[in-house]
Image (cartoon, rainbow, N blue to C red):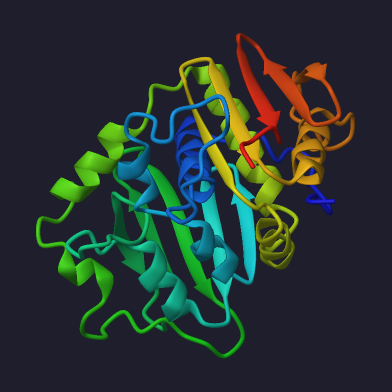
Length: 263
């Protein structure tokens, strides 16, 4: 199973956090490697390549703990400097890294934590050091030092955010819930699950979205987790299921999870 445990109230979060989670779902589930398309889709949907350049799948796996709080996304790590360098963008590189639009907001004097704001969504992210580790905010060459225009987005970040398809509010809740159920099991379980994804992609527009994944077990586990009476998204329902694909509905939006990809 992809999901080990989901805390009660996981989907109760601020609008800004929901926007951030939906965006991160796109960045986590659209890896830049392995461009083999599903059988019924074009190999590069408009904007996909621009967004996939900012692949965050490895970044989530680098955290020791991830907590999805109502007003903050909290990452904890025993090697926090690596996580900081991975999350805060370096958009001037040929291959940009990090979460586009994330900026340092404040930090603890003792290096125990720092807080960032994601400019496009206004959501907060906190990175904290575990154990005896500390975050060296004064180290030369930190990612945010490469961003010379402060809170304004750089050109690569603007291109990435422009590439994000329009998302209906109900679909945003579905995508947010999808990310929550992938991360709440813990980074170790996320690493195990993502290693078995095979080819995968999350894409869509407005009310209709599709998560393609070669691993049928992953597809059905996620569909079950989204509609389960105990750990599912409140209000979500299973609209259709074949054993190899499933469609989950929420309000006026639908998310199809399918293992039918070209082999």
